[in-house]
Length: 210
Image (cartoon, rainbow, N blue to C red):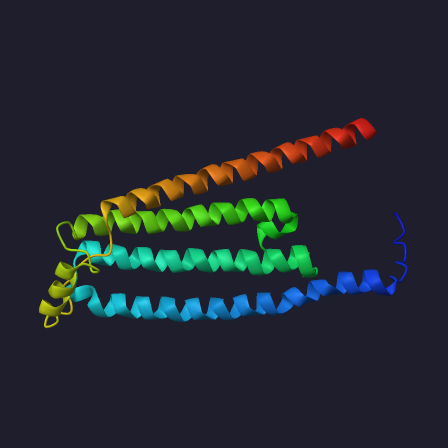
């Protein structure tokens, strides 16, 4: 069994630089507050779904459910950033042996965290794109809300707040969403390939050294 060598105290400048990592702590605490905000948003959307279920159609219900899934996925992204980022860049959480330790946290590092965040962003983008596809089918023929016809339609439909008078979506807008989603996918593939290449190079060097 190897002995743990006592660490020698750092000189003032390295100690100051190393301690500066704690400046990130308020950032992670702020993300925890943002997580609470998303919990409130989820509760509001769920209550809205329960109250409106008898009066809305299947597509409207699907859009609300997709919105709930979107909130959950963003919340998962926040958890990965909070837990993984704190563990990687600030301090150890010392969760070894804890029954609730996340499976991915045992082998997390900066590269793994980047890949997981990229995959989470792709998932969120997929939900937004699916919502846009469904909504485009529902609002076909409605004027843009920013146009004169859209403003007039909103004014005329004030007596019917449950009906949609205009839309913020266009075919070009959905097309650009699709292009951006594809760019996200290509970026994630590039990050994963680069990480795999770096891991292979590092393993090869260690093998040659031994």
